[in-house]
Amino acid sequence: GRRIIKKKINYNLPNFTSARDLSVSKTGQIYLCVRDSVYSLENSSEIWVNITPGLKNYPTYVDVGIDNNNNVFLIALGQHSSILRLKSGSSSWDSLLLSEQEVWSISSFAFNSNDDLILSSIKDGIIRSTDHGDTFEKLNQNLDTFRITSLIINQYDHIFGLFSGKGI
Image 1 (cartoon, one colour):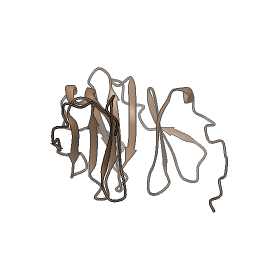
Image 2 (cartoon, rainbow, N blue to C red):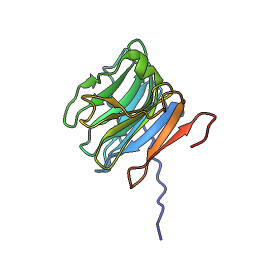
Image 3 (cartoon, one colour):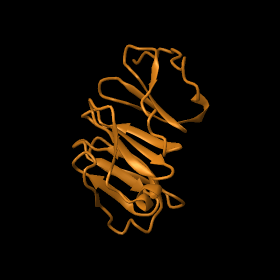
């Protein structure tokens, strides 16, 4: 069976109580999204590194995720809300091409087996990017009237959405 090893790894996190989301890359790097920062922890390290120190216009981070190319995606809310992307090997974040109104309605995201970025919205249904966030298309089939608060994708690429007050 599985062996679970407990090890405290939140040594130098100043704001651990406001944790929002946790994600891990295929290479084992862990990302922690707290209210006002995103930290990364290298696979063999015990030191969390803030990877969002230059992002001053975003006081609230909601969700963090990593695609198979180690691009980091972040839902950032604030003065100019955005979906942000940190491309693998880069040190600067870029804002993806969604309107601020659309970003405010994004509630979560996931990646399918093709590495497509799938976004769920509390207003616009399901949104997909097949090019790592460069362009987006709506996948709505009468879903834009439902409030989707969370989504997951299984190994067969079936998308499951949690509909507020309506079920899955």
